[in-house]
Length: 398
Image (cartoon, rainbow, N blue to C red; front, side, top):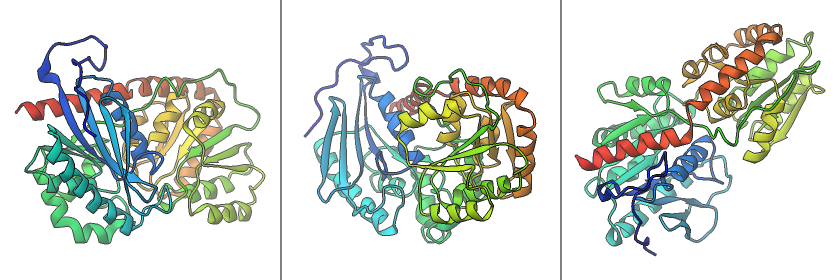
């Protein structure tokens, strides 16, 4: 099914109609994960596309993965179409290499079929692997932009070390051939430059829904509520947080862990062995609305990750007015500006010391939380989407 004719362009930020037909833009978007499949990268892409298609001069086709056995075609609105291709998905959060390969091959085939029927001005590949590799195969048909998110950058995730070694020559060619390569934080850009130092990489940061995630009047109780929101996988470092808190039993606190994953049994065992099972609650996976209601009722957000791009969860907590304690990875240095602390990755002693300092100075939390909110307000999804649209249009007009 083809798109209907797009009406005249409406400005993304202010809603004012425009008669400049040159601002019309057709975008082929590629992402192997998209809600309900995936994690922060899927959520971020959903938010960006939701803002982009508010501009009626833009039309978007997203080719992503599905959970069924048949291809699904969804028409969200007249200028936004989604194709979900079957990849044999078993777990919504965890990817097997066979599933990634099925997406790569399936997306390439679907994209070629679509390009025989429709013209697209530009391709936006969310994640360098596998989406960027599909875009590279389509490079003779249109320019493309690669958005780097984290695990698609060599050196970010040890789990994919072998994959990056095998794919390094192809990944480099895909970056070299792109009209632009974009990282979602300065920290991730530096890691990408370390991998391929002679290639230009720019930054368009992660964003946050500042209308959904908002502060509420709240006073810390006798036992402050610490919260982390993360997939329970080794890279998120939740075990380090539990270990550090096990050494702070003389202080009053409670920990709320929001998220699920394969590490939950091991983490539950660690909580028991640390003697803090009466202070830690595993809330499991929760929807965005539940998280948005719950975060403002907490006192301090902690993310002890070993690697991040720029954390969606941290930005959402900041938008809710929480002080933050982050590890020095990804965009942490960009997010923490007199609203919390940053500690080295993997350092339990440093994490414990920072927790102790913050727990002992609750009088500072109100000011830190207000600063968190101000920082988050400068990173709305509409601003992020506008930066992408400006980039796309500059490329298309060349």
